[in-house]
Length: 365
Length: 77
Image (tube, rainbow over all chains, first blue to last red; front, side, top):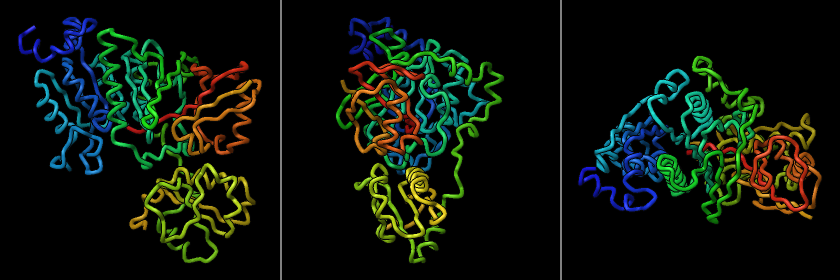
């Protein structure tokens, strides 16, 4: 190993379990990071600094101001620029010995196999189920270890899918509309994807160097509020095998966008504009099902505030003939509208949910 | 003689709590029914059950002292 290399990695090289051999293994390994966002940025930063041989980045997004609190490879001056180019520039400043490939594309079933096949390990740093199922199925076909990470408000999940175990062994089918109240717009504390992205980078280094116990076939949940972790074991399942496309060709024929499409129940949902015109009626109750701490408040519509979890107990407060449920992004409110319809005699009332939630209102306050 | 139940992620939006102890029930099907009775929205929510830190797929008999975790899928990144 050259002197400069030996100096750069000195602090990890002197770890007995890691050593020169561990460093050489990193150098010989290529990693693909899908998504250069909240999870991808910290993972990329540490994998590059650690000295992996080659790193691929896929993302077709542009940098937005609202990305910057957690996507730490980018600065204010990068707004509007391509994520992959800015990420590459930032990473090469950290460590120019690492070869960085960029793919300014959206990963689809037609390009995934070709791109993923060029790497030894894949890190999933995406933010939607369509990409997650697509990456999972492609990695299963190509037998590439997949390091999964995902966040929701203050909690994150991490797992390594390898040795025949994959995401479909936990959740065989993509969720249907309303099954996940994962209002991504409900927010995320900036440090959380930072922690989870680093968990992913850590698992990647452990997997390659053989140090410790990588989370193969285990799903770890981390809670940033109480620092607790909870790890469960995953078993191979027959159902997962049946549901996954078995060949590259079968994979390329799957329409993941359709498979994971949020099927909107159009009848129950209204737009912000429809809400405004409905609000001219006197016999309308607007019900905000968010938790008390969530903002912005909907003062203009003087809503009744009933958090989703207490809806059943508080139903008596909803008395008018027209009822519109609202939440941050329109998912919890849809669930609430359905539950409310179950509990009352629907023919007597008109029950709606605000599609897109409070985020869809131009001036919510 | 009790079951302790842990709720993760946005399941806590439905339950309003992250932990619960309930009297022993026979199996996971009964447990699900009793939870849906308590939290009707759970019926519409996707999650997987882990019994003593192992994910299960079918109805499983519950031992006297057991920890059950309900884990939803996360998608954010």
